[in-house]
Image (cartoon, rainbow, N blue to C red; front, top):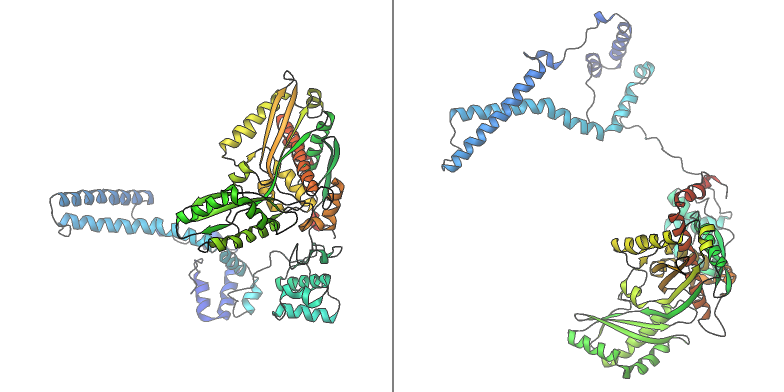
Length: 588
């Protein structure tokens, strides 16, 4: 049943509905003839308000007054009855008259105001239906005369035509495989193993995806990528790859060496701003960085029948006498893994054990996980009642902001500093030393404290960390804890020069494994001189990469804070980050 509100049908239309299209044509023709006659021949239709004995505003006033006065009278009467313990159903004649008056005035007010109020919402909800009715009413007379019925549900127009889907499959054999994937006969994830050709598997998966979704992937590149290199380690079920531009900031003068910083980003001004910071650091004699700590963590959670029993394991793990034995069991997992310590936390019957170990040039999550599993298997013999809930209990803590990483550190803990000369602050950064110190205190320190920030006492460390991580094949999700940073600024040398430092307790990077072995990411690591594993000093390349990240963050912090201090932030973004070019229309 169609309950949408529709305009009232004039008499001649109602007659047509009852007697068919021929009479409709006759009435419509008469209507067309009389529509040009003088207004006197077509007097306006009477209104409902014309039947009222009094003007409309007086009638409304009377019923409003009647409604509220009667309601006030009845409420007072019911209050007196309650006080005097008189049953409410016992009513007098004046009360009956008041109730009738209340109902009558309510019906009048509801009819006058309520129906239009409700229908206004109904009309909004069925706005599309009104538009279709108007379209039907505006059809030319020939359609009305020659058509017996109008379809009640015309096809909805397409708002946006999808892009044409161009097939990338040329052989009949591949087309048959595509149909098998669409029909569910061949799982999409098994194409590589069944076909033995990763590029062909990606092409077939892409074609099936386009046909199933009815959407084109023409702008997503397919050719020019080595799909063999990601099989079983970087990405499953690929259909292409995303292009991200890589810019170069620098050279960054760090610890006496120059580094060109690769940054993969789509944010305008980021590379340019970091480059300006590198220029200011270079002109002031360079920056110095120090590695404070190097250790990846993993924290399993186990449960016992009692908190006492959980505490016994805690004391066992923290006893220095047992460390050598546990270390020997842990280190069997890899020739680079070396257990550094175990930190325990108790929550009732549950015990969280945070293992920390060095991992060479690898970021080390898999390495430390294997070592932890070895220790858990070893502990089962002495603690058979130990129930292993999970290899990770979030006390690690990986890919989440956590105070334990901010305080204890995770991965590489680095501090980087530089002294920027007064003339450089004025000529290159276009600001003043005092203004930078004040801004840093109010923004990065006090402002972050007001916001309740956890490890975010900086301007935009995550911008630089993310760009370098993507360019060098790191895990972008670990940007969360790797961007923990506190930026400090202080006027030195009698207030003329600026001392700036960044302290980053949990930079998680590696130069082997994962995305570091892909061609593009490997090239960026090679640009920094940290490609692959260090043969002479295991772990040296990963540690150097961490210090370079901290140095780049120092440059980015210096430049952005200067832009904010000088009032240049909005102007520079409007100039370099507001392109009007529609890249989606560029032919791939």
